[in-house]
Image 1 (cartoon, one colour):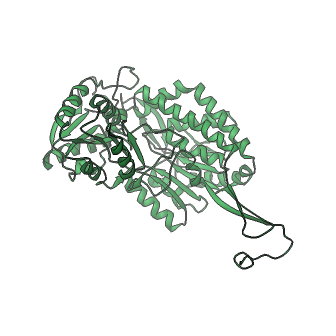
Image 2 (spheres, rainbow, N blue to C red; image 1 turned 90 degrees about the vertical axis):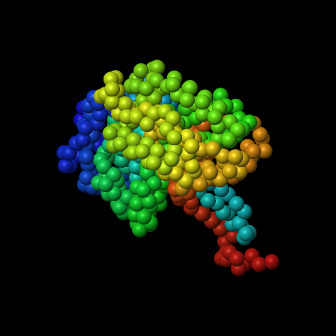
Image 3 (cartoon, rainbow, N blue to C red; image 1 turned 180 degrees about the vertical axis):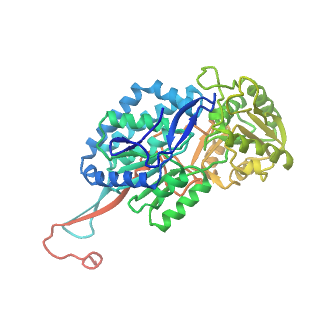
Length: 493
C-alpha cells in the first residue's frame, strides 16, 4: 500500500514522488510505502491550513467540539482495527495497542467537553463602570511532530486541543509508523472535518520537520522526541519567535523502600520497564532499592522475568514485543558493554535474539543489571529499550537524591507504606509525574503530561494544560462610564 499526504481534505502524492518502505518490526513483512515529502509539500499544507484557520476560528467552540465527539465515536467503532494496525507497524503487544487507541478515544471526548468550557476569567476593574475579563484565543496554524512509540495517543494529545481551540494544524508523523496517521486522516475525512483544518505530511525530520519549524506561518510547534532534537527545535523556535512545546527524554526510576510490598513493586517494575519493550519516555530504567530488601527484590525480579513471553505482539500471550528497528537494537546493545566496562553486573539478558522464531524481527532480551552506581552511563543516559539497572541505597534521603541526579525529569515512583515518606516524596521528587505504589507509566488524559529539566520546557501535553500550548490569552476591558478613565491614575485613594 502506497500512502499519500492529506492536504486540504484531499489525498495528494508527494511532489518528489519519493518513498520509503515501512516494515513490521516483529516479522520484517513490508506493510506500506511512506512518502518522503519535501518543503514544497509543507508549503502546500501550510497554505491550506492558513486559508482555513480564520473561518474555523469563527465556528463556535461547541460546534468544533462536535467533530471531536464524532472522531471519538469512530475511533471507538474502529478500535480493534486501529489496534491491529498499530501493533503491526510499531510492534507493541495488542493489549497495549488497544489501550493506546482507547487513550485517543478518551482524549477526543475529553477535549470535546472543553468546547463548552474554554474558560477565561472575569475580574473586578479598579475603576468604576468598567468591566474586565480574559479569554482564550486560537493562535493560528500549529505544527505537530510526533514519535513512533505512541503514534495515536501523542497525536491526539496535540491535535484535539488544537482543533477545539480554533486552530488548524499540520502533522508530521514518524516515518516508522505512518499508517496510524493515515487511518486518522481517513477518520477526519469521514467526519467531514472542514478542508484545511487537519493536514498530514509524511517525511523525515530533517526535511519536513525542519521546514515546519522554520516556516513563518506556523505559530506553534509541539514536538515529542529526543532531547537532542528538541534542543534544535527550541533554538529554531526562539530564532523565529515561535512558541515551542517540548516533551523529550526520560530516565525514570522506581524507588523501593524497605517497608514496600515487594510483590506489588515487582509487578510495577515489570510493566514499567518491559511494556512496549522499554520504548517509552516513561519507562522504568532504574530501580533504586533500599539495601535491606535489595537481594529479595532482585531475586523476585529475576524469577518474574523468566515468565515474560517475547514475540509478535499480535499473539495475545506475548508480553514483550520487538524493538522498532535495527538501529535501535544496535543502540541498546551498545549499552551492555558500556555497563560491564563500568563495573555493573549483568544478571540476565543483554542479548540480541536472532534465533527462530525471532530471526525475522527486531528482538532484544529483557535485561537486568545490578551493582550499578548512580553516576554510571547506564544509570544516566536514556537507553530506550528493555534494560533496567538496580541501584542500592541506604536511606530514603539517598533514594531521592539518586532519583534526582539525572538530567531528565519525567516520571518517578516510590513504593512505601510510610505516609510521611509519601508526602515528602511527592514534594521532593524532581519530576513532572510522581506515582505512589505504582510504576512509572500509566498517565491519564485529564492530567498534564510532561516533565522538568531535560525532559521539557515547561509546557504540558494532555489535560486542560494542553490548551495553554494552543491558545493565547486576550485581555478585554469594557468601559461604560462615558468618560475617559485612566488606570493607575484616576483611581488614587
